[in-house]
Length: 318
Image (cartoon, rainbow, N blue to C red; front, side, top):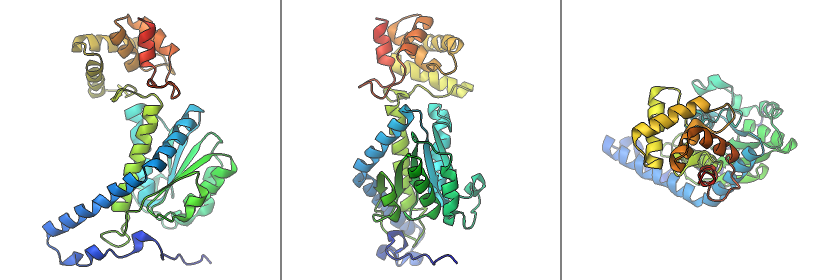
């Protein structure tokens, strides 16, 4: 028989003294109170910036070594990991071989709760059988104690993978199993125990910061522009042309022509068509020469000030 779970000492399960009269409030007062409480999520994230930066460094190292970043979680926390991993595909052309998410109970648990899935530590260990030493496994658990996540972290350590935890509990039990622990002190929720509120908001902020910083340091942006964004439809192609205009200062017709030609010379596994077109526009060189230069200077997080390699490729054509 499974031992009963104790909620003692878990900040998110405590009653919030500021919301004791919650059900007596009118709508405007309710909205004001909930919005005011959200500031604690931002403050919690700001306090955790050094730990978030440390986790980013592990993520960059993992991808540079050919590893995969794994988000592992249940409930709202796990769903946030799924959202982030899925949204990296169109934004940075990053598939599950680089960043993937594992939700307790499987994909179906995203839309419908799977009872007991988060308590299955063995399922987490079984999941870890597919991890590798170059991977980074990031546990997502508002409570900081989820058995499914615990199993995955234990299994990750056994294969030599690096580990992290993002929790809304300053004394999260799982912190001892992680190389980097991002522990967010968001305090009690407006509705006691409803961790889809401040706890989830703070976790999402950290996850977004983590993945965005990893993508930037991995060379998937030039300045603040997405040079790996997919161009699978007219809307996305128009966005790519717009980015080329913003980055190069060249007319729209020049940017569209460069992108069209770059799409023709782009090869699978090589620099993106947007990167090729950008190098050509910035260097004032033919697209084939830009493609060759972009290939010689692939993305490299160790290249200070130019992880994408765009600046180095342009300089080589000067």
